[in-house]
Image 1 (cartoon, rainbow, N blue to C red):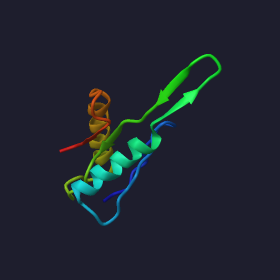
Image 2: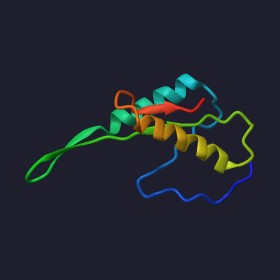
Image 3: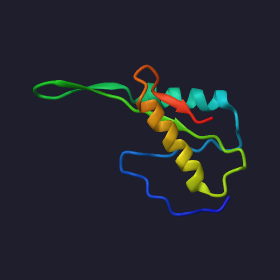
Image 4: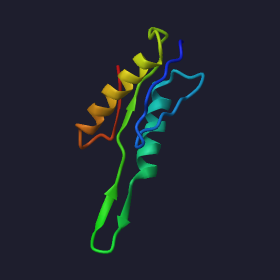
Length: 92
């Protein structure tokens, strides 16, 4: 896959699972990230819940470069953000 420069925001990160195309592993990993980040932060005058949304894109060899794969992950991320019951979504 051709490598391209892609800007990732300061509040975004990428996790690669090498040598696996297992959807169940991707789901477990995303769920662990969501559960690992969820917490309550206590501030002087109130408290806030901290959570994350995760978009997952699996590589099947059809994408021409990382940008295409990142677009799929970004689409999945916004689907996860739009569903208050599910904090991660796998692009299919």
